[in-house]
Image (cartoon, rainbow, N blue to C red; front, top):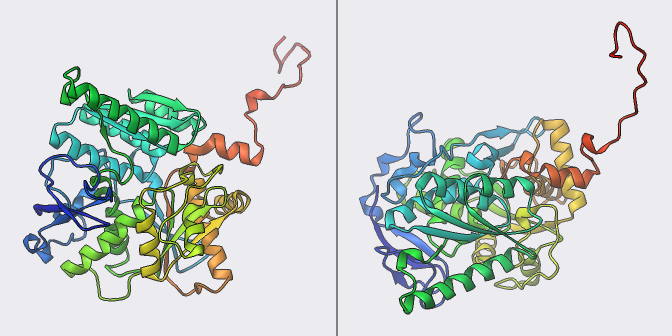
Length: 417
């Protein structure tokens, strides 16, 4: 494993030591990237066929840490039954049923390495379940703040794994504010000696610590390896916080430095949002460098309900550099694609994944992409984690809610008296 040379601010490029736990850049509050001494990485360490079947197969480009792992990564790349050049990266097979397992495995592993005892995070749903699971596996206390209307599966996960769960009447932005305020109050208490450093929560929010990106970047390594160490023409990514898209772009840079990927143009990065919460799409269309807070955010794709992503400036920069685009789609269009893939591909996508499949249809229809382009779409989570949301969207009620007709006893051979 390579030594970490430093942490680098993604905005002002200030270098920060990784010897102690860090959150964001102390100068400009930009997100920090982990930088390695790549001269210490043997290009021949590129994973061969077989070996460890988890994201830790890429240990040559990950921090030197004892992993807290539940078997995350190495998710299947499924070829569409209808479109010969379309592949779906099925992140539903991760522990806790979503891509969030990758980032939380790495973040919690590093937290354990640093000796942190209490972690906290706001979440739109799946990150909460992943943090709760990995914290339980690592013997670390987890404090989670989620909107009260998250999918029931996410709430259940937090409770079942033993996390401290707070449901908030608001959005993930409100949850983030509450986490930040609580930590600020704890630091005041620590300063006057009423709390020890171990009592203070460490914030593992999206892009407010550097290691979730390192876990998420393994999606980039995997998709390239699964395509024979070649880039696809485009990658579709459902974008709430956008860490996966940011992490994959970092992976592409690292692979090129090491000579692990065949030379060629990087894929167009397609960020996909719901019309009910589309801050990045609106900023992209307006030619802005960062997004504005999206008021009254509402969509049944819970993971896309992020009114102001912390890394919006990175998402926009990557999309533009890659020649990609940012799309927003209505819930009706997303639901239609979800049902289409269920009935014609045998895959119950998450609403976020269905936003990406709907975006593919749109960009083929408009000519932005050609059917001959090799494309990878990410289904970021299991559709079964959204049964309450999907059922409501299609008007399906639980059978127990229906009153069955009363039976008249006829007594005798085939029916009870």
